[in-house]
Image (cartoon, rainbow, N blue to C red; front, side, top):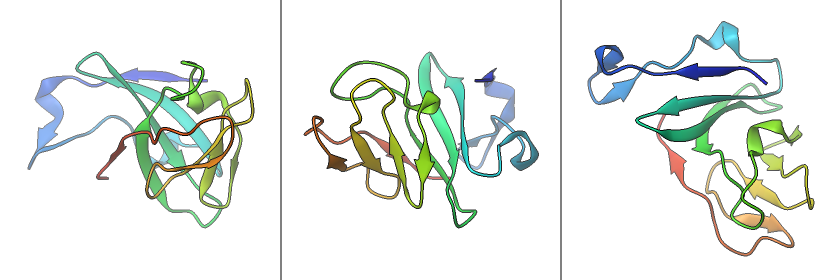
Length: 103
């Protein structure tokens, strides 16, 4: 897992630059911190990039350490899965959605 901290000087049009596309794995996630909020920047199986809350709503662990398959990310601890586009849980035990941010 790699971690990057965003600084306010990197704000452009309301967006914060936190990493380069080249910093992302072909399929997978990196953790970044924006104003003390941990965010997972994720490249899915189709190559699309997503930004989600990096904390599993069930177990309070980092989602960026989980596996990405298609448009979902899995929590490594108990197996919860979240849709990267909506943040909705698509696999138990999580039942609460996670935040999704514009990229």
